[in-house]
Length: 220
Image 1 (cartoon, one colour):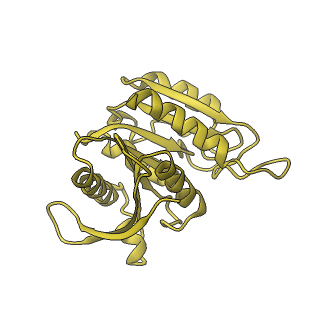
Image 2 (image 1 turned 180 degrees about the horizontal axis):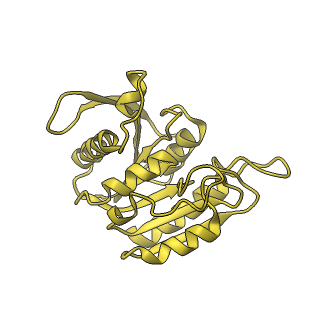
């Protein structure tokens, strides 16, 4: 396991501070990843923690952080604009640590929506969405995901095939609307947080394998 540091950094152009845990890369690194949690989670969420640890072990700078509303015990902003500010501050923090690295943002559920908003950040080379909430629970008829037009970088979508927030047929309808290269990896017998369905198993290796293969193709 690589070394970790608890870090705090200011948001850009305003008041406020974001708290995170920086996982230092094992060996030389040419890439970094910023990991954003879901609406009802925080940086201690097991999936968030394990993804960040795996990234560090694979030689990436890796930062998991709390959105400010989490530490303030409040609610996320309605349009997620405040959370985009937090994520972009996290990206800027990692950029200071790794000036020449290719940087990527990864988000779980609501965090994936924030990554979509933040994809316009010039420091980001791409985004990774784990369990993208394409529509309200069990309501695939709700269309036009609001962040879709904001995705302006290559994107990877990793989805459980039994996610009530993302009907796969609907997702496959939406993906061709994206102007940038994109890829979908489906984790079988898995739910919104990749919890196994129909038997015990650890799905994290499957999720991380999809993420690492996609990253490796972009960082060489």
